[in-house]
Image 1 (cartoon, rainbow, N blue to C red):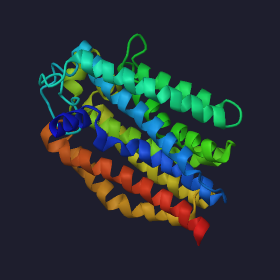
Image 2 (cartoon, one colour):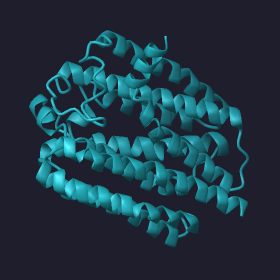
Image 3 (tube, one colour):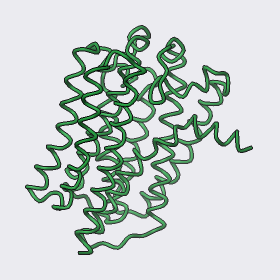
Image 4 (cartoon, rainbow, N blue to C red):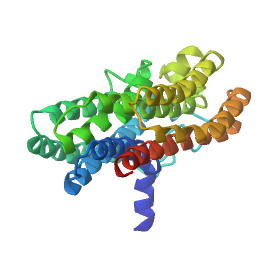
Length: 305
């Protein structure tokens, strides 16, 4: 039983659920900083619904990448790329993965409808439709966003502003442009994580027609944009603190720069060597969680102190 649970945790890529937890917590923390009270039940439903959509995205990604052959022909396997391999290793059948994805979407929809019912207007309904549509269209034909070079933008927007806005709106019952701006650094850094994780997949993605940005540009030409995305993350934080869109304590995120620089140095040296690139990928993932945690804490402390 425990082995089966662990297998499905692997299939859903649960260790990467921080990509959902961070923007949801950020939206709620901004609500608290604005003087609002948190409704715990609505918060838990918001988080659960978002996690279900995230799981559905990851599961469907494995399924459709199997259909296209992108994962099947990939021989450069790393802990952060080439899919979960549960289909390729014969641990789960493709139909099981698709059924699990549909189940997650099916469970997320009534949660979203309830949150829309208890919230003013139909903002949650609109956000939910956008989120689920982007989740399905990420790898599913005919849209296949990540096959057309739109995957990074979709991930950055959905795992940044969209989730933060939704979490904030459920609590506050109002829209706030400040939430969008405050969540942009989170969206950029998670897009950066996706971007660097595409480097090991370059050969297989290109052969399978999965033309994400790295596959389109080629590893060497794509590398400078990785540095740009990292720089933009920190520049956004500095500028937004200066404009008072983020609390001053948000500058503590700059303490993650040494680790980010290490990731950049490793990427510059090993961008074409998948196995030696693994530490750079790991050092890119860590700043996402740390930056997210610091931003959440900065808003909460700004309210309480």
